Amino acid sequence: MTPRTKKNPNKKVKQVRLPSKPSALIRLALSDLRKVEKDKRYKVNMRFWHLPISVRRCNVCLAGAVIAQTLEAFPQQSISPGLLPYSKRSRLRALDCFRQGHCGAAFTWLGLRKGDGKRFGRNICDYSRDSQSFHSDMSRLADDLEREGY
Image (cartoon, rainbow, N blue to C red; front, side, top):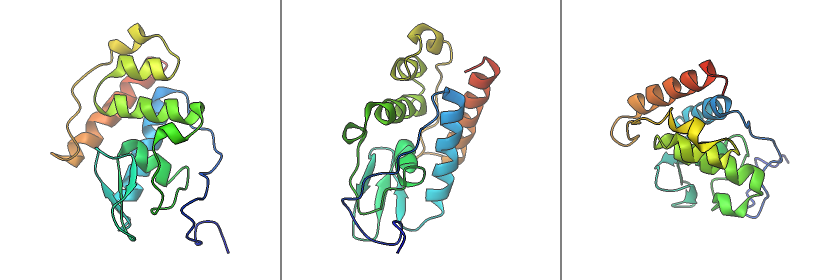
């Protein structure tokens, strides 16, 4: 029996390194978000990290999509960054800042200079208002960061 098929809400998340480069981290999160958008076990709600709402459904935000997909948490697990090692927690918190356009704060979480990140700050469309615009805004942010070496 593989770990993904056994329902174990106490299972630890997968030990994987999340990207420290902002553009790569955002791209990973967007990829994971697309996966949860297609998975009936998940409901995207940017107000919750990774929070089960029933036996068969779990709320996830952008960072929660990474918890669900890359870190392979089960939908029955309630997980927030505070429960994870700092290396994962800081990257998930950075994603939460990026999705709100707070790039200076995101850079701080990633151990980068806040001032360098502030110049990338912008309005990001709220996911609940228009998910396609959210994806576009976040992709554009990742492109801009990558163009500048981040």
